[in-house]
Image (tube, rainbow, N blue to C red):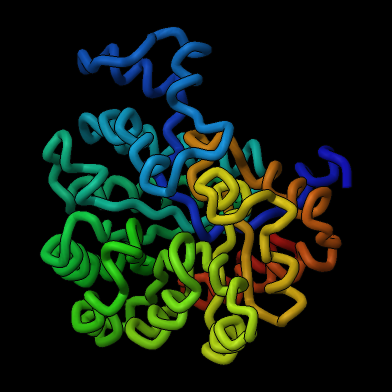
Length: 338
């Protein structure tokens, strides 16, 4: 499939971090405005340290690259600008019609000590305003970063519940090996009681058993990445994912860069589809990982052997697995031509 055809396809994205959407030019502009230090103020030079274009040493090493993006959220105007630019890029460059943006308030807002509620209201309002001037349906997912500890997760869950009206769902992200899902079993009960949908970064690293542990302990509706599930030669883990009705948010290029898979061709997305697992395609952190859905779709078709029918299947899974309300999912389905 050629690039023009891929670019023209209406797309859906359920796994995209706002912190990974900060444009290089915006990093430079905000650094000048707020007196922040950068390795270089030359965009071409800064890209060399800001964008990851080859596999990193590990997932932890890749996560460590987000320092410049994190520092860019220096005030509320920056939060609003970065959110708007993330929406604009998704809609105009990638033809995304269903978008769920996620962010970690403890990670994103910690540096400038911004008020969580004020920042969240800005993000939600920016999304709502963008919807009115486009054909895109979008929602916001709040993240708890595992490496910040259980207390941070509990605080973020409480914040999410308090802002339920403007939150599509909740995500547990970051280092799964050091902070296993079982630690959060009691904490997520507040989400389930409040009927806030849950997705969990799981199976991006470590052992395939972590995916089963996540499903059993946390009962998420979706799992981010999930590639390690395919490592179970018995097929039981993939079968559990399918039986639980969990949607896997795959991010092929990201998984290659974090060494979750040895090559794009080895990514299990096609295996998941063949097994009848619900799965979607995402770009994860488009600016930092130097990708977007146009690239991800191209890789899926030209490197991993997906057909146009397979792509449509992932779009249907995205609509069905979206955390948005039924009427907005219906609107997204219409925009996607489903």
